[in-house]
Length: 127
Image (tube, rainbow, N blue to C red; front, top):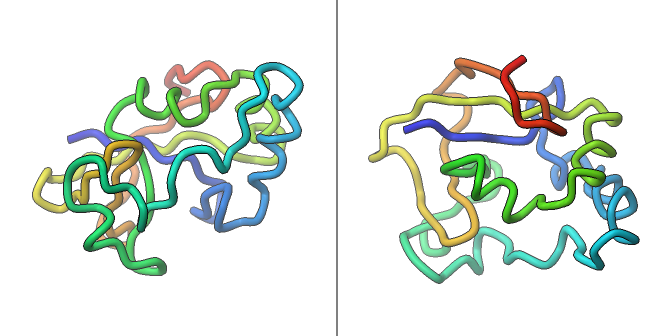
């Protein structure tokens, strides 16, 4: 399955890198949503096995579709702000059995897989 992950050039996500505030500041005035609204992986109990099996430091968060990514990071202005901080969307092709599923996000063991593509964070189009 294809997995979409927002990360910087070092493979760190916005929350791990400490730069999630760029998203919040970049769009809060537009729709009132903050990056902290969706649950963290350990509290994503709506479906699947993510909340029960997630291990910070071992698993990396991502999304099962561009639509799921946009549901979490729904502000284009906020994604633009992260892009200015050096973030993009890496695309991974990962066997379904290797993915922990949650309602808001998925997780996988990043070191075991290399990106197969990259998308522009603002437009979500292939680079």
